Amino acid sequence: MPFNEFLTMLIQALEREGLRPCVLRNYEGFPDDNVGHDIDFIIRPAELPRAIHALRSIKNVRIVGYAEIPLVASVFLQGISAIPGGRSLQVDFFVNLCRKGLPYLPVEAVLDASVRRQAGNLSFYTPSPVHEAIDSLLASLVVGGWLKEKYLPKVQRTFASNRSEAIAALSPQFGQKASTKLVDSVIDGTREKIRGCVKPLCTSLALRYLLHRPFRGVVAIARHYARMIEIRRSPKTIKTVCVVGPHKCGKTRLIEDLLPILRFAAKEVGKQPLKLQLPPGRLAREMAADAAPHTKTTEGLFASMEMVTAWWLEEWLNIIFGKNNLTLRICERYYHNLLIEPKLYGFGGPRWFARLVGTLLPSPDLWILLDVSSEVIQSRNPQLSPAEILRQIDVYRAFVKTRKNYIILDASKPAGEVKENAYAAIIDMLAQGTESRLKSRFREHQREEPS
Image (tube, rainbow, N blue to C red; front, top):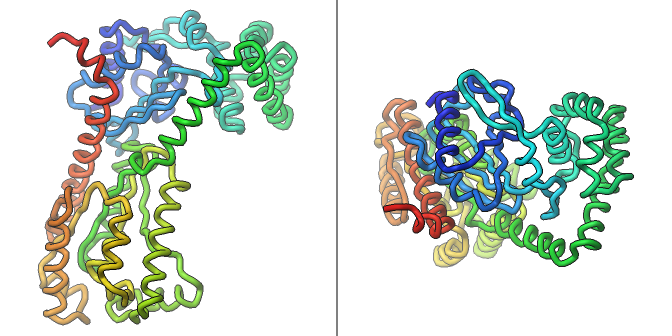
């Protein structure tokens, strides 16, 4: 669906739900262009169920991801052309404009002062110029601690033209002194002065809440950190797709073809080999053996068990301290490959130990097996014997059929067809998981809807 068509349908759907569609920023190219690559709306917290219902009512669009923190609910949609070659779009519903749970700009004030804007035949609301400038500046400055240069020129112009109004809007949250210093620093344009305002602003915001609203401030901060830990550090927010198959069956090419069209289907989309970082000497031997992987030297019993344990530890550390929430990982090599082809990884330990460690790792959400004929494998790997080729084919097929969610693709077909089939399977997996989360999250709202 073209972006302008989707945007019109979304605005209409929100209005049918009784909401005032207020776009936070990056609306200058509407309705045809989306300069921000996503869409940011601001709504009241109680309006979130109706906003999600509006999105779900749009035909030919699938929700493939959802994440909610005290600041924003992020929805990832498939079926929209937001950028050339793209197939997905992120829509954010901001329910709070806050730092660590403490609002730096009241949502109610922003919505009450919002103004109607016309873009072609499309009508929607935007924040007042001062409120938009404050949020565009503070969303990065006090929330992330960095200055977003993209918005600074517009913020400067707005603050210079509306200095008193900007200070008045900031003062209830930050105090007169800190607010005046920030506005004047932005007007002056000195980056060092603007960054120097971060600490006083954050300190003033926290102190004013703890002094004037202590209970509400403590609860807001506690809820913020609890939710962020749950979202960012839980393995449930990481979706893993594992592409497996015999050596040189096209796994690398398929993943490289998938990454561009999966952009915006999740917060972070990337390739991860999940290969253990080895000591320099061992790494050199591994790299030398890559050309003929089935000739790698098999490690001894204890070295193999140490390798598996280190791999398990590395994977959990990556899950807990690695990527952000709603991360989609496409893996070419995964731990379970160790059970399929132990020689490829130089594993000489007991298979039961590898299986035991494997049960302690989160299983991939989708397995994609690139199935090829023995003739194709022989042409790509002439050093392999016919018996070894047949063994590889059988062992991969047998293994993947024991997985809960898998798809077997004929890798001898054109690369474009294989890519589209793999893409469809990944989108189906994401959409089904998201649908389950949405039903659980908005169960009460669904019961209120007419049958």
